[in-house]
Image (cartoon, rainbow, N blue to C red; front, top):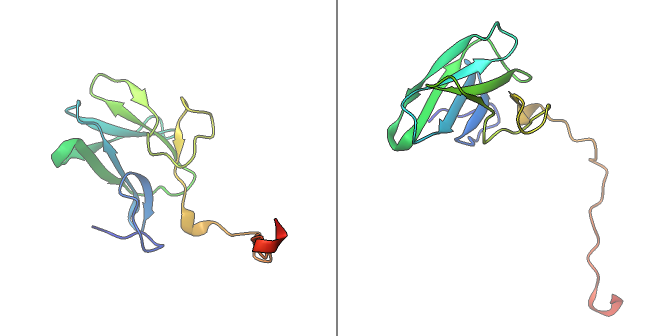
Length: 120
């Protein structure tokens, strides 16, 4: 199983990799799945069926910020149930997020003080 840039793998949803973005979704009642990249003239990429009802594949040339949906064999499009970000709400396209790019802005925060037994 390929690791992402930050050294761990979620296993489902969209993950930024060196080769592009890998997608994996569980859809056991379907025979085929595709990922549709929004804003690319609706370009679709077929996902490969795996054991246990999973589908996966990698889309080259995209990264964090790309918006996408999954498409079933009947043409229905849906957001990623394991999406990390839904910028247009729960029914809109999902957005690829790269957690390795997040920069914490609270590095000086000392944390919460726990009360001592006599402080309550």
